[in-house]
Length: 327
Image: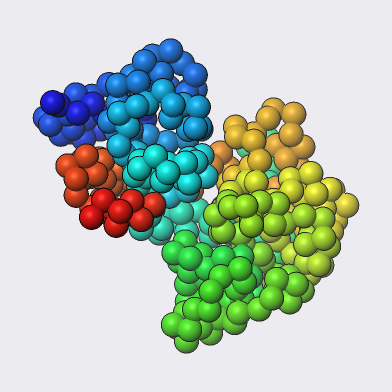
């Protein structure tokens, strides 16, 4: 029997053709909701899923009796019920590694644009308001030589820290991560408790994933403990931050500025104060959004689903205890 794969995000013609050589493929790249009838119909017959961004619930899984594996085109997997997938014997795969450097580029872009007020000042020119040399009221702050506090120091966090330490001579602090002796030697990084880091860092950058432990990790208390004039950058997950508390901290000057690629609700609601605050650089979740990286992520997902449905070990399984149980 030929196994069926439901693909609900765009693949290249070559990637799609390679899957169709060995599988029956339902291709629904424009799916916006898992409640769409075409998606549910295809899901009911699918042995494998390839895609991202849809919330997969236990109720949806009840309608997928043949499902064996999911290959998410993402690193984060907070929109999948991992424990429930494991209980049902459904293998989940993600795409780490291939987007590390690109996402780190985005993180450092936010650091630079926020510190130097690049977006705000670019708009000054676009609106025809650059009529004289800018004064102190439009000056930014230096990045080189400053102290960068990393909340999380996984693959992406370490890549940002390297950019800061080796490219900009920044002092690196980190927390909410296991000890990293090799990075401490390479970058001169120091591991501190959260409150200590917040008191010292000029720029705080969040890269932790969303888990039960990290949800609303940053709230009013944490913002109040940040160094006066500090900048806050989040490229992890929006729900790691209490967004209302962050907005309040930005409005009352507790927080100098913020650079954000992720939000509690995405897309960002039109009425959000974040969309119009001059001390906020907001991007539409573009961390890995380059042609090269998104293609590499899709290819990793294609490779993962092929291996998983062939009964082989995928390149990057999330709940790999299933593989041990199968063996």
